[in-house]
Length: 368
Image 1: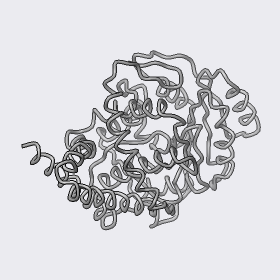
Image 2 (image 1 turned 90 degrees about the vertical axis):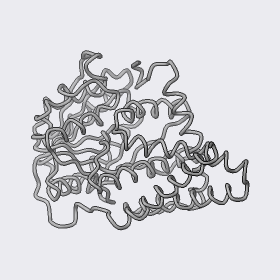
Image 3 (image 1 turned 180 degrees about the vertical axis):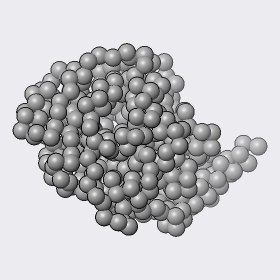
Image 4 (image 1 turned 30 degrees about the vertical axis):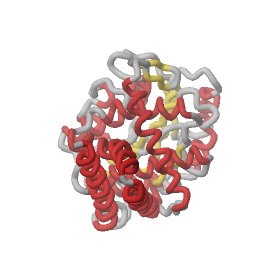
């Protein structure tokens, strides 16, 4: 009985990974190649809470954006920072006439989490036809706005989710980067099949019309994953949601520095994942259940079990490698094989940590 279940789980996971590779190559939707964009007015919203260490690199990337200066409005939110964030933002805003700084006041923590509260207040000052969102620990490429706007226009969508990666870093950071490539690759494949999954607040565009239709962050239910809830709300209003992946909209972010930070991040994401449709949760469950199934088979039939495991790792690595190529990145295959050990650990430790009776921490705020 147990042997049969293990074989089925392993087979289904191999089939799933194989189909991911095939669909990635045969059904990949490109959204920014068919026409030149005009230059609608855009508002770039960046909430900041104790980001003094990260802001310089973020602001430098904003300086390099290839978009008419008079068609961009930068809206920064200082979310009651206790470091030098406010001073850095005030100085930058003072030298850029197309930017404003919103001092975020405390909101109702039962209605909105801290980030949603900041974005809700910041959006009141936004005057663009399109709202673009990123985080203070991110670097945006020069063509970011053009690429996101063009994707929206070509697809006639209400919300566009971009692609984000973790740049050059330690081995621990590289493992997190591979995890992002795998997860976002699966999201992209599903979205291109017409099955929208989630949105991502560090690289996202929402039309003002779509945002207003759901009454913004004020109108969505409380969630630790406010970007996910926003995506769901916009889709429920009948707007199209797309996942746009290209070299021109590839945003860089930073890895978690330690295991505690990583598990805290994954715990927040799990709150959103638990609200996904059953079929998508089944896909994620298959990824997790593969490990006990293949370990069990390795004990019973070592040669066959190890051989099948290596095949799975090879297919998975190929998928990650091919997906990264869509954005002009080339990952090292040899390092990708190490990712399986990391993936086994994070998959199961995330589940344990999610159900562990502790509050979820986000930048010093406790939820739960």
